[in-house]
Length: 430
Image 1 (spheres, rainbow, N blue to C red):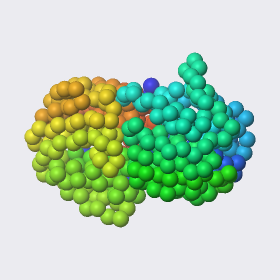
Image 2: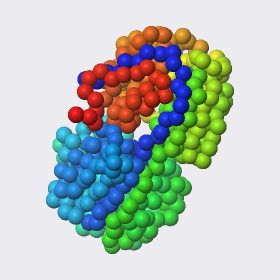
Image 3: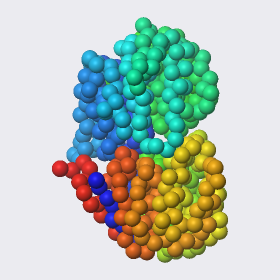
Image 4: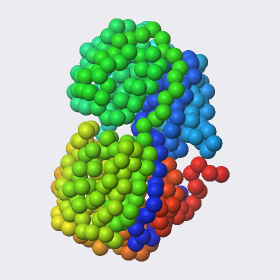
């Protein structure tokens, strides 16, 4: 099992390039199910969840070619024949995005058998909103030994008001509605950039969609979609993680190939902390704060759906809060079990207490190296950030969590001066 070994104390200096967004790529790959033609996706990140999705689509009968290196992260998917419309548990048990194939499979083939999703153990991700929406569109769904079985001759357009904002639920039903008969109107939709990215691909495939990126989306169903070429958005969470890496180490770091307009809530909080940011069209330079620069100030955060502060940046911001002057409160409103990194940060010397959904961080704490355990994807990143400023050499176990969503994370950090190395089998290399 792979480990990271990190020696703290180095400011990060130079340019670091952001990869494509995993959370955009996964639904866009699932969207290829909706057509017999080839779908070409560019800027696909080389991470474990993408490989899992490739195995999933291939197991259904699709042809999937993941291209890296000279292929410039370009992926070709052709679902001409879907001989086995089943999302098998042994493939999807490590990935919550398995539910994203439910809608497109029913819309395209009239039948789907999908294992209940897995992924990070950060709290409940109920699939009931997917089921409720698909049933409103005419699908019959039963639960059978850990699988959802869904059937429909052809889905019908429906007016659906989501009980709560759900990103995967919005994406799943959006895909299903593109081939439904008649018009669908969805209210209380997720507004995340990943939803907008998926809608852009679907539109390029011939779908008729209005309002993506707002709380109300209208879809006029069509009888058939065609192939398309689409470039995946930059990963806003990876970009945010690197911004905090630059701030916490007091470096001079240029985060390149990102989309600053997707990072508004984080940028505002970093500036509130006293971090100097120079925001460009597709890059952000971070030049202050941390152990080697000026003093950082505490700033409270409360996670919300986009455009609020993202839950996927909560753990990383908490690592930064350990190095600020004053007391920070971190309130987690999205997932009920997303403080598993706290005990590991405490092992490194952080002063953090938890009461319900709120963590109180008292800085500025001198962090020390320790052996720590990664519990989920973003918790892994927060522990790396803490290790970058800790005294001594920190060993992080179970970094396979991090490999699910960050492309060549340690290599990118090492390229800007971090002392970090991997022990064990290197993902993506023989």
